[in-house]
Image 1 (cartoon, rainbow, N blue to C red):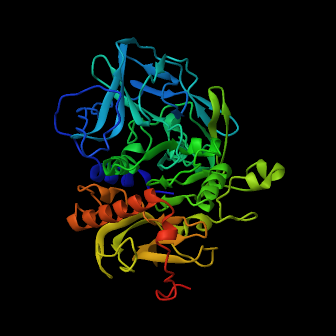
Image 2 (cartoon, rainbow, N blue to C red):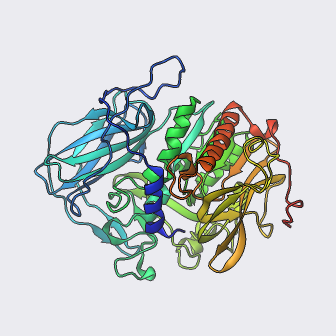
Length: 496
């Protein structure tokens, strides 16, 4: 649920920085987290600066994540005679957000067959042959971008890949929202929102990971660059123990979060399967802290199934109970929005707040400076400019809401002519877990001093970075709800 192109362009403008030149130092080392160790030099020039002509070069991997050391097949199509692949680990490196860990030699280019649109779901598939098998060798866990370059230098595109941590015990786990990336991916003309003819009725009802991410805006990287990279670099600089995973891993592995200190979902994590939700809920109920750093989280219900290239690579989302054939065979798995009947399971049960509307642009307004997260950083009524949008959530007691819950920011908004509030919330659970929900998609942008939504306001940047650091350090220490229980303030704020 987002006005996609305009919002993405704003985020790209406000949430990326261009590293100054430095000498690349290829290595298989993650960023240092020791105050005494020398920082690892980043690699300049990692960005896509020449996207090229449509389909000049593009590709995808046969999996969204792998364990370090596992092989990954790449499927590449190009009109060029030769191309190269460069692997960058993304994160908090010296003077750059990237560090080159590997580069291929020249590879022969092949223009692969055109897309296939599979009926009856209008699912786009790239029916390609593997181009190369990439060995991840001793690469450390983390988030990677594989850059495809034509040898002439005329075109570049990314392929994202996550190398997940073997065990997340004691870690703060960063989850890449690849199911949401794929839902909006228009490669081949179709997404879960759009069809080439512009008619919503002809959109995809299932989308496949067996295709590249679109070149326009996404640069082949899904939503990683603008909704996730600013948080990744921020978190790695803190020196806390991090884990890395995708929401496909969250779906597939009920033990992924065993012993994890916290789970962090990033700027837009809208599409969730039953298993994803069950596994995160179980982790919360075992004392794992949760943070949702967007404004439209856990909104759409999906199913995952296999393709010819592997398990969990087909994402089904009819957005309609009646239209989904599963409504007749397993009604609880029909893919209408989570809150809708006949089997409503509102996302507020997990988040605390609940998605309301888009598009909106507003200031973030402090509601409760006494909160452990805000105390000494901001004052009641203080406005942090431009940090509510493009989508927002709030506490709505017409839906089931965990208590005690504390509203930290309560920001007046007007969306589609209706006056309302956006709420940033924190609640605590009997297990001791603390659960934070930003209620705005612009929270992560504010971690960058050049955030376009706040016009680079230094006070807004300082406040959000201080609050986020305080939260992450407390979450990394153990069940934050036990150490910092929520102080319910709904009545005092007139919410009821």
